[in-house]
Image (cartoon, rainbow, N blue to C red):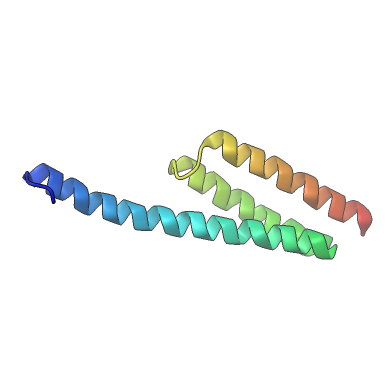
Length: 90
């Protein structure tokens, strides 16, 4: 247990930030999953709309330092490739 006032406050802040980060990351993963599922089904239009949302969520997570900016860029690139392939098949 923390002893000083500053360490007690830091513990409270860490708890709040942890919950916020978990929510952001979970939301981001859900949108990524929806893009992959739409691409797997071959629904190009659905994949494209889900991709736009996923890019927004990835950028938000990267700006909040929940994930690294390069990890966001890499994920966006891979998702873009999937969406393009789904569009080519349709």
